[in-house]
Image 1: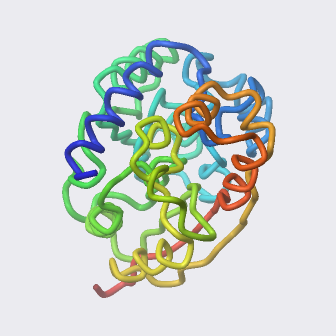
Image 2: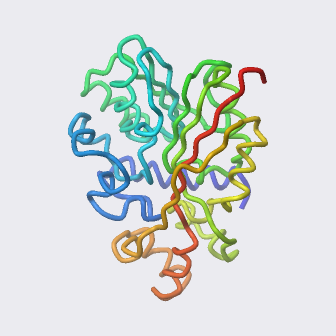
Length: 272
């Protein structure tokens, strides 16, 4: 499947998700209504932002890992409804800034509405692809991303762009879906599997190598978490994948055991 086709599939799928509340994405990251608390958000975090910003699409809480400081500039790759941007805005304060990037117009509309609803003055959302960020060089102190880079058909380009827009000594904190082994070709070509994060996921070792190849240093795995079996029996997109491919729950469970949520940190060197 070529890059343009993948982007069209993802844009269309997440455009639909943007119009519905708490719909999940099919990779286990949206499997239950309280998924955000399960992947690292506190109830206090969720209560502090507009309810419509929490779409249960994440596989971690990168803001909690980023150790954000007052005055820092943060860029969120694939900002969705704006949850991580709004949490980051509280950390960086009035002297800081948060920029959310998303390629889906419906997501940008939803995030901007949430921004107005929450009266955030240090957050903005820009329409654009994470492979071609609408951001100047050396802008950000911190890059965050939550279960989005797996959807990109050109992950190397994403990490190169993240490296470009980071300031020297800037840091990147990512939560994402990766594979422990290759998956069958029929799943790679399945439309629902792309929306569900599985088809586009990269093998763990290659994913880490792509980050290093972009120029990052100190690439470290913070946490690695297997995806829960409940994803298969509660998420509609996951069930659609099973129907499309005519696979049993046991076969799907074996596949799911090959998918993990990975939390990774990396830094841009002072001289690059």
